[in-house]
Image (tube, rainbow, N blue to C red; front, side, top):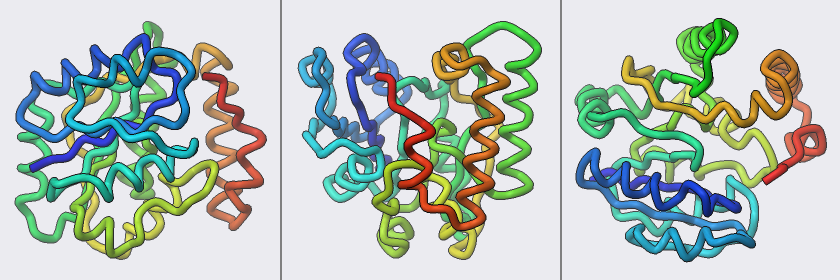
Length: 223
């Protein structure tokens, strides 16, 4: 069983479609964890197997979803991402090797332009070289390993980076050749170059030990 955990905050425009598309990929458990939406997210998320209200914060929301899940594998899916056909089979195939504790997908950013193709390539390279996946790459992990690591650190930002640092020592982490489709809204809102440079700067500071809670003020949530 794969449990798909979707943290939401004001995703009423897209959440129903995301749940329906995820269902069509195959049998799974879908858990939506909402961080206090003021739009129709909770109503439209009723198609999920379970909808949980949570304090705001992606780490807290995802941890609550994981604790409520029944699956042996946890797949953390951001609301602006879409899984490819065959995603669940690809995950199960990747986890056939007992040494593999988790992994993520390649990306296709939903925008035209060479710069976005370079971003996709660079994000894949980051996973291969640094074993550092971001949350918008649909991270999946064995539930037993997730629990052993204590889940996502309860911070305001970069909970995915901190989990990846812990996961490096737990076993093999893979990058699947299958690609998820990612909304370009974040890059388009701030500009792809500016957004990428900010991501790199925040990642560098976090790896150097700067508290993610302090870094969060430089990454405002605009939803």
